[in-house]
Amino acid sequence: MDWSLGGLVATVAVQEDGGAVLFTSTGIRVSAGRRHESVRHAGAAFLAALEQCVCRMQPWLADSPPRSSRTTLHALTTRGHLVVEGATERLARESGPVADAFAAGQGLIVSIRALAER
Image (cartoon, rainbow, N blue to C red; front, side, top):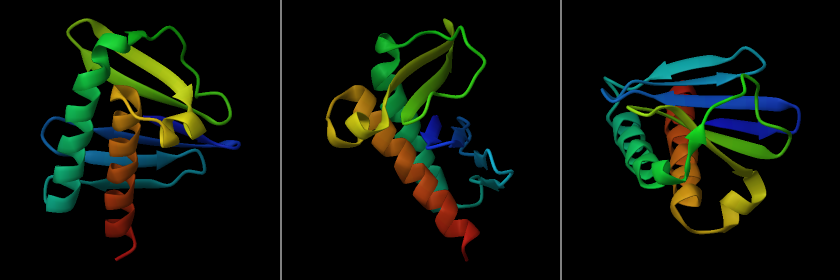
């Protein structure tokens, strides 16, 4: 998930084995997961939520971060690299599969940051 924050971008990625990493455009990188139960659970919730919105995703054609105030959800599937993008504010207040995946991605970010701040 790439999350644009007014000129900055936060990217969170999770692997099927529970490994997760948070990157920011300012150079911060935090890895977590396999040994961290809270991150593994948040990562599993994010993957499950992404699975529910894959049918709404399209092939990824751009290699650029999301526009300001936008969020892009990514999924690597047997159909290739798929994405869906939405206005961050709208994703934060609406319901549905894409908004649920955004909320799960936010939960993963919170879990990773909690570990980094220990």
